Length: 406
Image (cartoon, rainbow, N blue to C red; front, side, top):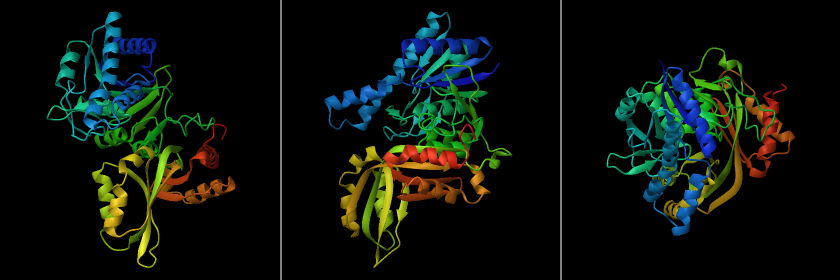
């Protein structure tokens, strides 16, 4: 008998009919002699509707109350899924994140999992029940409800799989697996059979919407191998696992894009120790995630520092940077939206040269200007005008031989 964790995303549980489909899949998995734990997201569109409701009663709802509100989305799904299984003659019990033993930090809307005590899960499994757990949420040691950020149900699934030492962890979504690029943007994209944690982490953090990046990071840390597959068919998906021999033969594994970006430039920052630290400490204290950072060559004792953030964070920083710039003696703070990030990812970059040159040449042939560049051992990311991002993705995808016809 195997212990299997299955996670179902918002589109997989988006309607009562789809919840019934998930119930049938869970019962079928159990009927094969397995113990089953399911992690469910809120029904598609519910989280956005809850956010809209909050803004209709408050211009600036507190993050604590937003967590309390948003956690109800997943709780609705877990109860409906358990009801569906019971209606079909099965045995199921639903648990909130707190009831499942998920303890988190106290940072509302972006909490981190501190510990998982799965006593309730194991008790119900031993009673022969399918356990349905609300994803995306947990509880602090003081009893406050917290949420894990967008895509947090992925993190719930990986953490639960690790805590109960599951034999398999399956992430069910509306696509057949991880593709070389979003097929809606690049129709010639191919499904990837297996991908390393590092590659998946870079793709997730670079805009691939298949998995939350923190969940991949957690999976790598605790060695949780998982499969991304579709909830609408029985096709094999993409296995995400430790790097294996032969993976480096593929130079570029995939192309990711991330829209909804903004670029911030702080001009004439004094070129002396502590100024950059003061700037980014203020952003960290405001829980603003910074991505690409570029500092220009110092001239006349000062330099310009540019960085990218999610466009939604622009409102959060408000006058913060203007105040810090004044404190450190810097100049104007310029904010620009309408940009996007394109990344090419592959562990093969470690042993192959010329990847950057090929990417830049492909974009140049398309007349696409690069605003910022960031690199890691297995990734090259560029910041472009958002209106050019789809064209850029197609050019890069073709240049690296990733098209299905290649």
